[in-house]
Structure formats: structure tokens, C-alpha cells
Image (cartoon, rainbow, N blue to C red; front, side):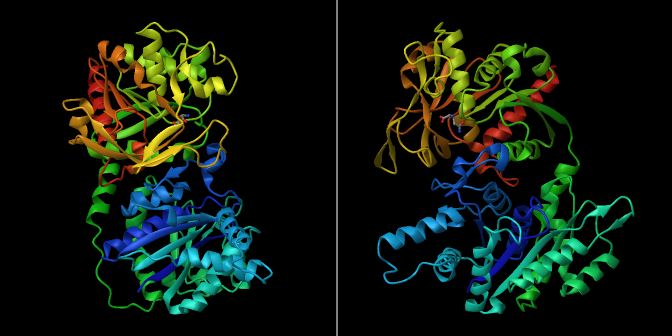
Amino acid sequence: MTRYIFITGGVVSSLGKGLTSAALGALLQARGYGVRLRKLDPYLNVDPGTLSPFEHGEVFVTDDGAETDLDIGHYERFTGVAASALDSTSSGRIYQSVLEKERQGEYLGDTIQVIPHVTDEIKRFISQEFENTDFMLCELGGTVGDIEGLPFFEAIRQFAQDKGTNNCVFIHVTLIPYLDVCNEIKTKPTQHSVKELRSIGISPDILVCRSNLPIPDKERNKIALFCNVKQNAVISSPDLKSIYEAPTLYHEQGLDLAVLNAFGLENVPEANLKKWYEVKNRIANPEGKVRVAIVGKYTGLDDAYKSISEALTHGGIANHVEVETKWIQAEVFEEEDPAPYLTGCHAILIPGGFGKRGSEGKIKAAGFARRNRIPYFGICLGMQMAVIELVRDVLGIDSAGSEEFSLEGIENSVEELTPVIFYLKKWIQNGEKVTRTSNDEMGATMRLGAYPAMLTEGSLVAEIYGSNEISERHRHRYEVDIKYKDRLEKEGVVFSGLSPDGNLPEIMEIKNHPWFVGVQFHPELKSQPFSPHPLFAGFIEAAIKRSRLV
Ligand code: GLN
């Protein structure tokens, strides 16, 4: 039997509901339970694929090709359970399927309403079952009181009635602000938020209270009294140095036990948190430090490259070092020499990205890494930029570029450009042919999700992976043109990973370079603290070697 845990938020957004959900999932797993995590987002976009990373953070991609919220990435990193398209939805998607059903005549005779049609659709989403799921954790995006969120709150209220309130537990994550002027922490916003939740028929069982500092017992007891929850059900969630401290911190305060008790479960298995304490200790006691430059576009918002920064941390865990990241706006290099920015860094990473802005700067950074023998990791767009740099500099084709940029019509016209990176119109997915045209819609028209690649025996990446066949997640429209393979290989480049039909370059590396790897996919999406992605572990290892040289 599956039990359900709903995680809602109050007072303000960005309190880390996703992390709380992920950490709780990990704690329940540590007691031997099977968990699954789901996210319900109130916005009207059908998926976050078209949302700006500046505003909404990165788009996380699942194996089955769903473009999801970055919280899904936290769920996977903390629990190791691979998410699927069934684990993330939005108001847009819910309404889309209600309207499709309406057009197909499924509700003939009915007036379509939020209650029951939209709420039924939400309940149907929540109750899609998976094997080995003792606990289904469902996080509601947004904050209680948001207009868009109301159908979701109503749906989970009904859901608890349908399933029996013993089978559903509600966790509310709120803010406890500290006021400097009176040197006090304030519980009133939390009281109001709980009142708001109650007014729509949901009484929280557990409160997770975010604050800068730990909340003293006196205030915890006050919150319990005023918000009608048990004293041990008020969990203090202070700011942490590392997100990976969250599970042990919550456990020490009894979050997992409080949740299990709220279900009426008393004699529960002990939690084995050995691996979480180990990760926490490794992060707290590094044996060294390396500095990695990340040359990208969305460097103003931490969340825009969430999985990249987490995967770098994992690479550090694997090598017992702290990874310091230096974020650099690629555009800077269009005007300025990269040397003063990059010389002090032990490795350079160019992450995925879209659009022309900053691309010439990225090409310069890739060239700088190549010539100065600095470890380089190009991810998706980062691989494409490295290939353009090589074709221009090594093959002498100055007009080499990407169709992505000429299509934007900013600088080069198609006639002037030599498209080394081209718009892919036909490819094979799971044995089936996929086709598209340049005029297709923008939403979900990319090569998305897991694809296999075959690795060249004896190459650096084959050694790193310890295998000749891999599967990695993709999210892009453009590809490196295979026709440059032979010419570049004569110059010391190795196309060491190809699609199974041999048509699409998936990985390139440079032979006589300490570590220069470009990948067309997103390895960061599969990295976890307990199993750091081998490419990130290898990249950080190369950065350590470099740090000993300079
Ligand atoms: N913009 C490039 C493409 O669509 C790269 C995408 C990415 O880096 N994820 O192919």
C-alpha cells in the first residue's frame, strides 16, 4: 500500500521545499522504505522547457525525455530513484489534458469546471502508481494562497478524503524571519500561513520552519501551540553550508520519525544514515581545493546551472577536494583577453546554452583551454563551441559556425556561414525515425532524453566510463556535422563517442592534451553524491593535477 506525503509552502517562495522533500525521501529510504517523489507546478506553461533559466532555474531532463523542474534533479540526487515524465506536471499540462478530453467528447453533457474536472485530473496524476512505492511524496510548487495553486490544494484535500486521512500526511514549509531591530524571531507569518492552509481545508501535520539560524525550543513550542501541531512536529531548518547536510540535520530533529508517527506507524525500522554522514564529512573536511571557471550565459542565478554545480561538488567528493567555482559571463571575452580571468583557474567548463549571445566568447575560452593545456569540459553547447574553435583554428575555416546563430539572423547570413553545427531534422529514437522541420513549434522539439552512444576503445572517455557503450540524457536541437570527423582526427582530435548508427558525434576529445572533452549530452543530470558522474570525477582529477603544476 502506498502512503502519500504532501509538501506545501507558505509565506514566501524559494524556501527549499524541493530540498526538504528530497531529504525526507532519503530519510525514509534509509529506513528501508521505497519512495517516489512528484512535483506539481501551478504555472500555466505546459512544461518548464520554454521558461527562462534566469527566472526559473535550469530545466531538468529525465531519461524518458520530460523537461521538468529543477527540483526533480534534487529528488534524483538525494534518492537515486530515476524520475520519469509521470513525476512532474503543471497547471498547463493538467488543463491541456482536460481540454483534450473535452474535445474528444469524454465529458459529453457536462459543464467543464475546476471542481471536479480539473481536480479529478490532478488526483489522477497523483495516484499513478509505481512498484515498490511505500511513500509517494508530492511537492506543490508556489505558495499557499496563490491563485494558480488553488486547484492543486483543493485536489490534495479531496485526495486525503478519498484515500483516508490516515494515509496522507501534510508538511508545510514556512519562513521564520529574524528581525534585527528587536532581536527576535517572528512566528506570526507562519501562523498566518497555517491559517490560510486551514481555510482551504488542510491541517498540516508537520511544520518545517526555514530561518537563518536554528530555532530555539521556546519558539518551537510556541509555533506548535499556535499552529496546532505536536511539539516534535516543528522542525527547524536553518541555512546550511551544503545541501547534503539536510538529511542528517532533519533526522537529528526527528523529522522522519514525526512523519511516520503522523501515519500512526510506531514500531518502525531504524535509519541507516552512514553514507549521509560520510558525504557530510567529506564535504566538511576537504584535503585540498581546485578552482573551476564556468564560462556561461546565465551566470547571475545560481539555479540556472544547478546540476552542473552539484556535479562539480560530486566530482570534488570523489577526489576529496573542495571545488570552488568562478562564474564568468562569456560575453566578457568578446571584448577582453581571457588570460587574466582564466589563468588562475585549474580547469574550464562551458555548460549547455542557447542562442548566439556570448558564443564568440565561449569559442575564445575553448581555444584558450586548448592552447594552454588547461583541462576543458564542454557540455552540449560547450562541445559545439570547442569544435567550431578547432575547425576555425586548426582547419583554417574562418567562417565555421553554428546554424543556430545564423538562424537568429544576427550576424552571418546562411550563405556566409560554414555550418559545422547543423539543425538536425531526422534521427532515430528507440528504433523509430523522428522528423521535424525548421518551422516546428518551440516546445518539446529537441532531441530529448536518454540516447545510447558507442565509445572508441582505448579513448580517454572509454577508460573513464570503463565501458564501450553508454546512455546519457540529451536536450538540444543542433549537432556537430560528422563530415569534419576525418579532417579533425588527422589533427589529433578523436570523436570518441558516436550514436549507434555512427552519424552523430556524441563525444570529442583531444589526444595530446591533459584533459579536453566535449560531450553533446548532459552528464551532470545523472551525477549523484554517492555515485559522482565519472566524467566529473575525471575532470576534477585533471584539475587537481593542473593545480600541482601552476
Ligand atoms: N543550443 C544548442 C543546441 O540546441 C545546445 C543546447 C544545449 O547546450 N543544451 O543544440
